[in-house]
Image 1 (cartoon, helix red, strand yellow):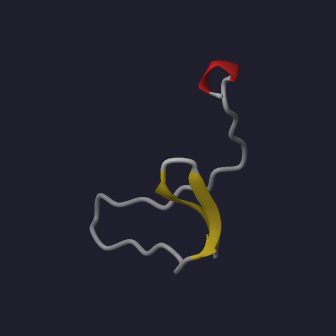
Image 2 (cartoon, helix red, strand yellow):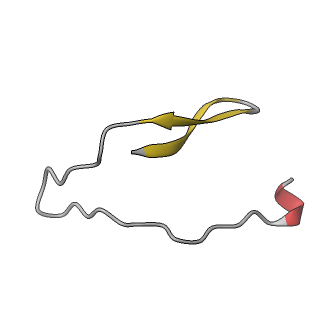
Length: 42
């Protein structure tokens, strides 16, 4: 799957990563459908 990966300051890239898997009974896989950045974060 494709994901935004943080490599360092000012270095974020869209990379191909393995699909997440559930490894423990307390794990969950959540799908993010919307996200935003606050203007003050820029």
